[in-house]
Image (cartoon, rainbow, N blue to C red; front, side, top):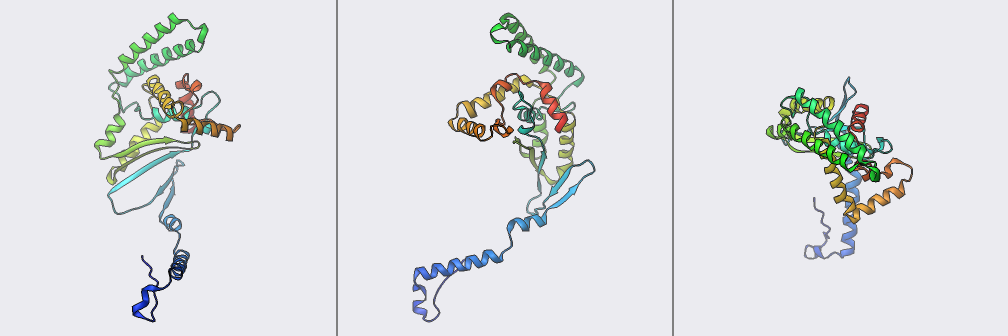
Length: 280
């Protein structure tokens, strides 16, 4: 919408009103327009349909008819503030592990795979305990445990189908699949054709109830590398982490969402399962 200020007294001079006067009239018209117009936020809120299911899930829906697609966001009330001391980064690690499939998604033979996963966790935890001894650690034992862990991980790949959740969504027209962890919430999102909502509900329900934390030690290393790139190797990252730590000396907001390196290095699957059972 455009607004013009001009004089009606003389057609030949209507465009030569002093610029200051025209500017004042323009500003007045804008003020009138914005005071009369309804708030976009209020208008949007009226269009949202809110439903609470029997299981406690709150559903918010906003219909937009210009595209036969649906953008789906599922948000859990769990984040970095819910972590216990010594396990910073657990919520973010859980977010990563929720993409590793379930007991039915991402496996060729879960019964056989499960036995290997239990062995991997046992050996990996023993390796962590030995490494935590630092100077008093048995280097020979560390080498043996590391070799044993690698062998088990290689064997596990025979049963694991990686990126299966991503494949299911992509082959059904999905896009923008991702997740994010915050201080108070964790969000998983994807866009799909509108007729694929049932598929989304089945996948999300399955990975909520039956997640399998495959490639845990590999993914833990990935997150540690992510931290090195975003914090240790980034002046902005270092500054932000130092600022938050100074601003929230007692409150858990002072701890980084990605976790402290000393916690991430040895964080266990048990810690991740604990936060999953309690909050998801």
